Image 1 (cartoon, rainbow, N blue to C red):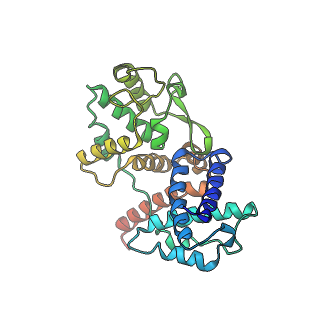
Image 2: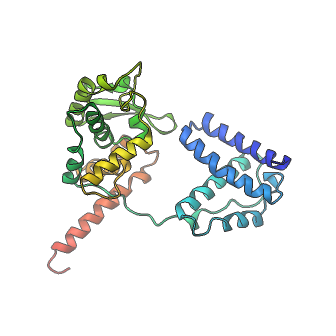
Image 3: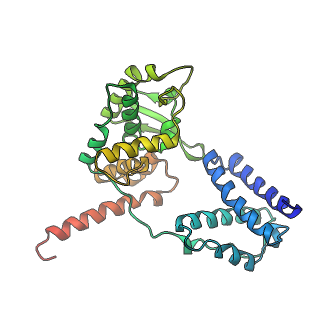
Length: 299
């Protein structure tokens, strides 16, 4: 990489340090930004750009042109968003270009309502775990944590036993940007966690570890393994397109349908803005509308 590429990369490292230290971004988020911005560096180095301050409108248009189909719209959206966030950071620190920031609007996917499982579908999935085996108890506990407490998959696989308060049926979780929240546990979820901690985890544990969820070898359970396990149970239950995120969505939708206040759901999910949580209200209204249309004699 030439001198100009090195200068471009140094600015990227500055931004990534800002994300880690000042914004408290997760290692996963920082890694994603690093990958997307490294591609931007490679592109602009090839164009002979020596400093981000020299970036012009034509350079931005040229980069956006590389994000056309067959590239997935979600990938294009992520890459342009990463570049926009980075350039915005440089501008705030008087090191950015004069050019206007790139727009991300043209790459956004149409907003779709999240899937939610019905209670029978959910129960069918949960019941497929072989609870006679420690691995099955672990899988049941994992699904119970994601659905019963609305945890993100990363929060579930990194949860420490010290964060559990099963005397009061609740847990403490550190979410995005280090934000801590306390989440009450449904009685059945607390019951399955107790059973796993008593009968499953001790068998899986091979050494010192404070993690609740352990792999078959007693190591931390990888995010991808959690995805694979949950997708497997979904397929066995005859369900397609189900992921850990589906279980978290289902948790939120069931709360809203049960009459929970949107601000409460926001806190339980660890959303920074209630606007993110409002999609569950839209989902509920869509179902009400559909039922109305099928039931009303004049519709």
